[in-house]
Image (tube, rainbow, N blue to C red; front, top):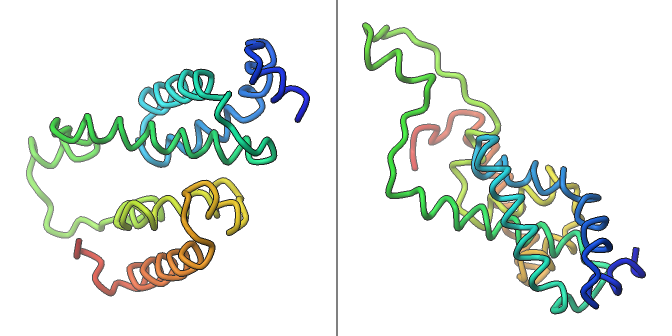
Length: 174
């Protein structure tokens, strides 16, 4: 793997493609958690490939290649969400409530993904990297470029927030 990274850093696009394909599914899963749909997640994967290919020469520690890619993917996903922020999109599952009669007794299903969405950006990133991508807390710290102690604090605070929201405390607060 280190050999492939060295070749990719010297401009070998086949070596880069081989490396990227090893982590493409991880990048897609990370992107999907952020952008919540296949089309946008695929766009993020494509943008991640482009940005990482253009900047692989800047990768300092080869052992953090995956972490570096995930960091770029998160950046791409956040950029995409910022661009879309001005556009208000209705989720298809809610359209029926607008057009038809609204039932007062509708049970709201809260999923873990919905709860994660209520976390701030740093908390969300730490949770995704730690539990969706399986990175160690040290790797999370490197990926987000934050001190290890901060990463631990953010993780515990985010988990505490998720527990409270799961129990119903502040469920509808933002």
